Image 1: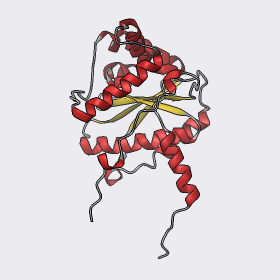
Image 2: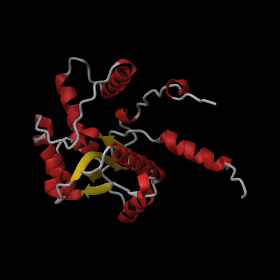
Image 3: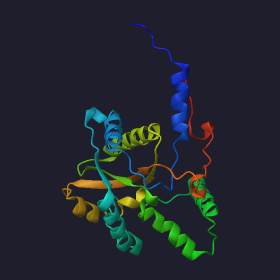
Image 4: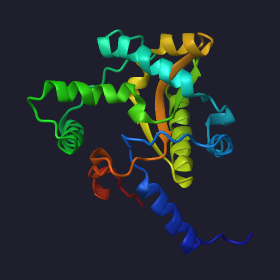
Length: 230
C-alpha cells in the first residue's frame, strides 16, 4: 500500500482555517443563502462518532423564530428562570479560573465596560440572548440516553460544524447560555421531550469593525497541555 504523504498547501490551508476560527460576538444582519446553509450541515456530518451512532440533532432557527426565541430568553434566562437539561456546576480553579477571567477582561476592555459599570455588564450579558445579532442559531441536541461519550461525539461534530462555517467565510460563536432554557426551545420548535439540549451556536457574517471582534484570547503553550511519550 502506498504511504500517504502530506501536501504542504493542504496543511497550510487547514492550519489557517483552524487558527482563524474565533468566537465572534457581533454579526451582520445578512442571512446565509439556503444552499450554503445546507452544504455546511452536510459537511459537518462527516464527523466521527462512537460506533457511527451520530447522536447529534440540530435545529437551525432564522427569521421570525430566531427573534421569538431571543425575546423569550430575555424573559426567562435574563430573569434567572432556568430549565437546563444538563447541570452547569463547574468550579474553575487555578489556571482554568485565570483563563476564564483573562478572556472576560479582554471582552470588557474592548467594550469599554469598567468593573463598576453594572449597566454595561448587563448590556453585554443581554447580547448573548440577542445571539450577537447573528441571523442564524443552531441548537444542538442529543438523545436522553446519551452520556459522556455521546457528548464527546457531539463536541467533535460541532467543531466540524464551526470549521465548515469558517471555510465558507462565515463566523460563529458557541454559547453555553443558550442551553439554559431548554423547555422553551423544545416548546417553540415542537421537539420531543426525549431530545436534550446541550447548547447553541450563533453564526453568520462577521461584523468586522466591532471592537469585541478584535480580541484574540491567549492560547496555552504546547507543553501546558500536551506530553509526548515513547
